[in-house]
Length: 229
Image: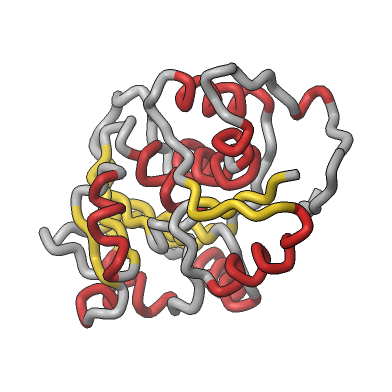
């Protein structure tokens, strides 16, 4: 719980699944937290059905080139979704290659304002970035739109409470990940079948874990940073 780094770790059997030979250890390493966060945000919080059924959902995914974001884009496109994504300029083509329908450079005026190039209003936002105020999200949401914050801070909880107290149809929902074996097995099988990929930014030996953390904290990794024995 909370993460850690070690040569060996003990895990509960009800939280583990077998890794297929087609899925490398490094590819599998990103799934238990980042992959499950993306899966839960989409299926439970945003209500996206990954079998492609249901009405189209207009999604915004912020920080779409990062660990959770790059899984979220791929998983979202398994469903009936239109995905607008934000990332840095150097990752625009990368996020498009994951399947995003529209990609915004977050440093441009439209990107900073989160405006869909096609003028869509978002039914849900999978918010994987930080430092974006509610006032930026609100005008871009549909009448019942919601922002799903995967790393909620004090301001997010305040907005959540205020929207609930005022019975607002536009909402902010803090996400608390619930780790489920069946969901992890689903993700492993997607990787095995070539329908989901773990993009590895870089690999570090355990002896250089500090350097890996520093790169992670810097916030500019493309995909996952992996620490190996």
